[in-house]
Amino acid sequence: MIELRGVSKSFGGPAAVCELSVAIDKGSFFVLAGPSGCGKTTVLRMINALIAPDKGEILVRGQDVRQVEPESLRRSIGYVIQSGGLFPHWRVADNILAVPRLLGWSKAKCEARLGELVALLHIKPALIDRYPGQLSGGEQQRIGVARALAADPDIILMDEPFAALDPVSRTALQDELRAIHAQTGKTIVFVTHDMDEALRLATGLGLMREGRLLQSGSPASLLNAPGCDFVRDFLGGKDLPLRQLEPVPVRALLRRRWTSASVAIPADATLKDALRMMLAKHCASLLVEDENGARIGEIRLSDILARRDQNRHPPKSQA
Amino acid sequence: MAESASSEDPDLNSLSLMLRVARSPGAWLGVLLISAIILLPSAAPFMRWLFPDVPRPVYTRASFFELTIAHVELTGASSLAAAALGISLGIFITRESGREFAPLASALTATAQTLPPVAVLALAIPSLGYGAAPVIVALWLYAIFPIFEGTATGLRAVPPEIREAARGIGFAPADRLFKIELPLALPFIFAGLRSAVTINIGTAAIGSAAGALSLGSPIIEGLAASNPAYILEGALVIALLAITIDRFLAWLEELTRPGRTLFKRACRASGKDH
Image (cartoon, rainbow over the protein chains, first blue to last red):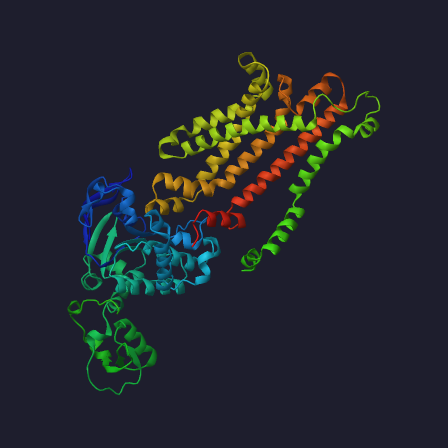
């Protein structure tokens, strides 16, 4: 869906992005992580041609971005930035419908789409006629996401969209984004410096440092085989063993047998959730339930401890 | 919520509008201005009491209505021309292609304002002759700077993330300018326009020295004939005109701000509503 081949960019000083190559598959949730100033935002902004690379090529949907008119390329790609960037003189509805209107959608089509987005993102209908300044940070960012989704693009770029939010709003928006991704199968490229966020969301993960992509792959593959000390440290250092439990669902270690355990956990929860619950409830095994609340087996602490080859269980996005 | 409820009811709405107008100082200043224009010709007894030594204490060579219209024409023409140049220049130097010209444009417009209008007038008369033309040129030069500065400041004050967002979601440069940047810069542009117009109304009085009809005519004549009553009359109407127009522009600016009733109505009328 998106491919960067040997891309370099410098803003006069040392290279902001250096010889970077990566391919992002259709439908993946690719998180580009790294410390501040590592060039991840520059990579993102090169994908929608906000920045032109000095060297290398960038293909979006198989087409070199330099051969597409920048405005029409950008209108076909959702874009969310950290501060929201909502237009303060436009009401929420006008902000959300910015791109459909640029594309010349009919009034009826816009109206219908607005309704869909309000439902999809659980936007309070009362907010629709307000101005961005009257909204909380979390609400503004929700509108920012709705604006990116408005014209139903198959690619969405997000530049630390939740970094400035309080933990509650952030978690809520992360959950919703994950659900939307699972529902729509859009290709999402997400930039963050927050590893917890990266591991919560990613189906593909790339780690950058000083303009270079150090390692990329599934979150599990990075967690289980960090290529260098920097990757290990950034992924969690001493917490790495705990983080390794993050991309693995309970389902992967499920024992389909009758159990006497009384504390239940959903099958889609992560092993980390399971471990946390075991610690909290002082028990070494948990009852596993499926989406409908039916008992389907148990999970044991000893199985989590005995887990060796985690790569056998690729991460599954939540249903 | 309460606001939208009241706008549903036309009677309540017009009543509240009337109340708002009655409460605004601008409306009263307007009334005062019109009264001054109408009543000054018959204010001879009052003026005689104020200035007992002056034989003819009320200016009668032209009606104050005529003088006011001429005055408004002078300031209006020069301010419009200054706005056209100042706003275009402000837009130009905040574009990628014009950024390098910013210091030059600032210096030139500032210099234009530091030239005393009287001097400009004197210098312009030989080529433009007596009358309104040299006055309009002098006032125009004087008014470019505040409008230009307001426009440039306003466009620079648009938060970079908003400009970035507009670019990133696919606004073409012209869309960005007209739909995002200029509307957000409007309060600054209006502030520049207001100060330019207010200064111009005061300064236009010197126009009568170049033979143009204006509210400065009684003042110039009063100076020549040592008639302080004429000076007071001209100055009074000029001051009232300046404040009234300043209030009017302030009101206009309020209306163009997002979230104001008229702004919403304008949006609705332009079909931006759903």
